[in-house]
Length: 215
Ligand code: AMP
Image 1 (cartoon, rainbow, N blue to C red):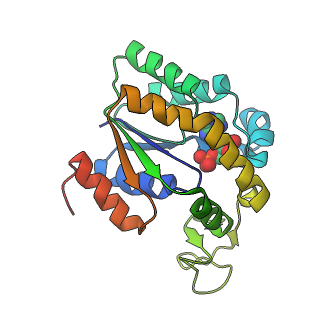
Image 2: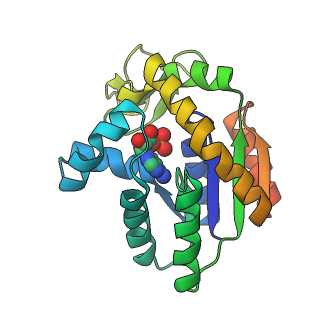
């Protein structure tokens, strides 16, 4: 099953994408993760996108689309896209690529969350610098402040999770990604999930909607 997961920054796309891709045995492709890795490895692509990512702006459509289509072309099986597309232009390019390569999109899942909740969640978000485990200083605090429960690694805040940058990312979402949701609602079978509850319950809700067998 080929899927797209849409939602504001902080709506839980990453968490849901990890859980659902395991259940569906599909490849999880997060453009944000790809860019952060490239920046950390100091590659040419990393240098190209760094300014956009750290300031909360969108990387130009042509750059992102090239990265995603190259990754999809190398994939033997199905995919779950997390963080792409983010603009109507990216969606049109993805559509053209899928048609050309004989693949098809099966479902779009939209994680709906209020802006107040997004700001609260993102500014409280931390992740382990070693294993990537996600925490929230309010709703999922680590047992020992600043250290990962799983591996003891140091917890860090993403550079783009500060309040100022979060507000900028939300503006970008409102201007560029909300029209994309309307685009998909007009063209595809979109499932809108309330993203305000507990992560595991939301995973079950989506899995059930997608017809994935219960655990
Ligand atoms: P995310 O982890 O999905 O919140 O993405 C982090 C940052 O990566 C975004 O704020 C953008 O700067 C960049 N990014 C990720 N995906 C895209 C995309 N589809 N189009 C443009 N920029 C993107």
